[in-house]
Image 1 (cartoon, rainbow, N blue to C red):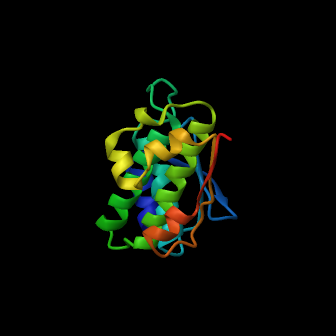
Image 2: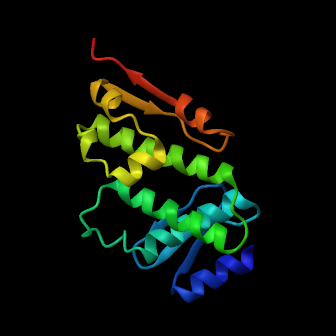
Length: 162
């Protein structure tokens, strides 16, 4: 797996800033990334996700996209790469959905209108726009513990306006 990540980085002129000690990563300006060593489908997906941010131009700060759209695009890039290299795993996709839902919840809690969420993201995440718009606050607990779509939906907590 390591050779795959290094190959993708070389192909896209990306510099490894540092190996992450956790399963999280970060893409930086200057085509640098901090990523975990890819030892399983999950950490490989994180590596592809961070590479995706750079390849998709998310770090220039002028693309006009919301953070959750950028996260969705990076997750789609990662999932496509996992398929391409034969490492796709449904659990990674479920983790990716919860991550995107978490970013949508952050936007909603800052006043973002859920009706502005692109249909492609609504469909993929199974976002319930009307329920989210009616809620005062939304919290999403994300991670890699999801086994089913229902687990992802159970991780969403809507707080009423009352």
